[in-house]
Figure 1 (cartoon, helix red, strand yellow):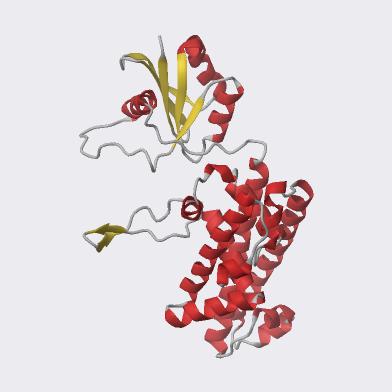
Figure 2 (figure 1 turned 135 degrees about the vertical axis):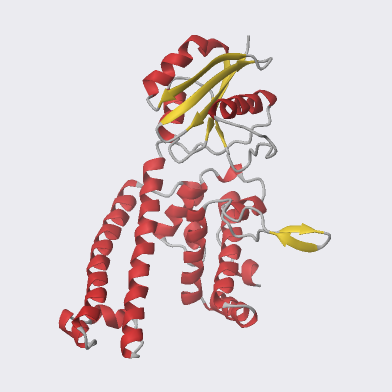
Length: 338
């Protein structure tokens, strides 16, 4: 007898359901999020289980890794791609686990990529670095805004960095106003230390795999961005076409068309936000240091706006990076910009 298992995973518990090929219930139980307990309930059915479908939530690492380590065939169900009929009157955890098992049995379960566990710590560390960089940028912009709003002067971040605490205080008539930029400066110093520590650790622990070394020939891509793109991309072979990769990197427009008219948007957040950020960063660096990239951004800015221009350049860099990784060739700016 062939069995199929669905696990509806939550933050503190999971609902496990096992069903046979005729959709008859074999086991249905709400369990705590403790791997030994889950394994104990699965063990009697190990030989008959064709697979286990686990809902992809934010906390799936422990369960999927644990089940795979014990020899189970696990499928990570993509909740954005597996949509239940919205006309149902009532659903609950019991129904959801059964539905996952049914989708698995029918062979129509849409699955997500199970990232190799041994590479995950570096990737997650680099994701945290990105968050810290974003926080630092927010504090920099906040300081510049406070100075401009209260003094009418627009100072660059380079000049603000060079100011002493006394010089910072002398910009404002009220000491209370000066407290905000001083606090931001202290936070920025702490963030700088942590970002530097993360970068040193990543560079010491992670090396670009051979198929990703040529990424550093792409405009705007240095050591950290190359590692970010490598770890967020995973295996380039899982993207059959360049359009699939650019969509995953959130570089393509999201729209719903009918009769030649735009009727709305589809899932704009579908894809990898960290990879999208990496290509926007690369675009900003490319526009700053490479004349051809700068000229492209200037043309697009004149026609649309700067934000859209940078995003368009990021899209072009993502397409170029795909071919660099897939075909193992150096970046050729003439093919990108003409």
